[in-house]
Image (cartoon, helix red, strand yellow):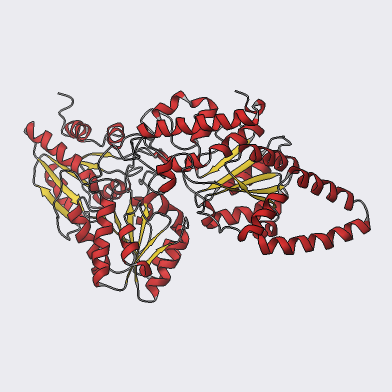
Length: 608
């Protein structure tokens, strides 16, 4: 479909169809509903003005992209949204030429876009570049680094700020709204362009233009929230109703014609068009399957590690006034809603700014508080420098509650928490604890807060516990089962698959000795070394990229001169796709049946 040929009324009708389709699909697949609903008119307007097979649209972040996916040949594929073998929930260039860049994390779009714009100029090519910021992306410092450079560059570039109340403050009062409406009228924009041309033709004209421009700027800075962007070098347009597809289309055409850095400020309603999502956009930001008529989730909620963590931290904060909770725009996701309600003075949501969160926590720790930073594993990656420079260098006691450790499922490559075991191990003085049950989460969190010093990470998975629900104590490496034929070892939630593996081996008459790492940094190799000396065989399993702990374990065994038949199972050296967690474990050989097969191979029994 050539959207540039649509009339305004046809474009509005298309928006209604897209919104209905998104609601229907996400009710059955789960996904990021509210963000995509809020961006429908904006996406349609962009497609009316630009050819996204040639022009480049960089999302920030990509969970606004569902309408874009439908409009770029993936309508039927939406039935498999975020499912194993189906299309991703984020832009993915391998799916479509219209997806310019992967966009699973926030605040990088302007930096990427200015890179694309400069490449275009250097290659003497002709296409447009747009960056679409939304859902708090502007709360991340990287966004300002990109804006500062892009505005100064003079490169033709359009930055669209999808402001749904999470990015910047509103302009003040009715006068501001009226002025914004007047300055965005087509006749005003045409006059402005002509005025610049005429006044720039003579010395006198240029002098008059300077005076009138200063007066206009003073008034505008008083009434409109645009001075920051114009000071950076952008032509500011807005704010404009982000659900007026006709007006958006005309402004985008104007912005395209300016051939300069432009910032278009668009106001939208997150969850637009679906009342339950409009009333509670946070709950429908990332949602599971739900009933369209009522908005109620299909699956009943079960206890999970995130909620358990939040409850435990509340209990500890009740008795200890030094404990503070820090999050980076993930209050609900990390289980901190209760803490925020009960201890608002000790709760700090810093926005999508993980580096700032770690540095701030370091400052709190230096002055005697006990900050606990609850953060997804994949987002903690963004604060690596602060981990080293601001926390570890001074040995400060900051506790990191590393949520979504391991495979997370449908969000896929951008969100799997499989890198932290490796990068946390490089931090001097860091201790990394890995609970496998709710009981261990409680004991390890208390151990981290009250008994350990320096930086401490307590990492736990998305979802609930498995068959293992015990507490193996404070030992660094716990013996769960004795055996003589093979040593099995792992940590975290993977211990459930290893228990399943051990049961299957026992049915074959093979006795597996199962050891569980409660602490993976520093790694306690000695108990495993003693076990391997006895069994002569080892199977190490972990939900981590490239086998972080496995490699350290192998090195420790070699240092001790221990040779054995060894197999290591992990998520591999590449990136893991999206899909159900159990599907992905099977894909990577980390389920009980696959580990059993691998263990039999190590024992020399093959596939009998």
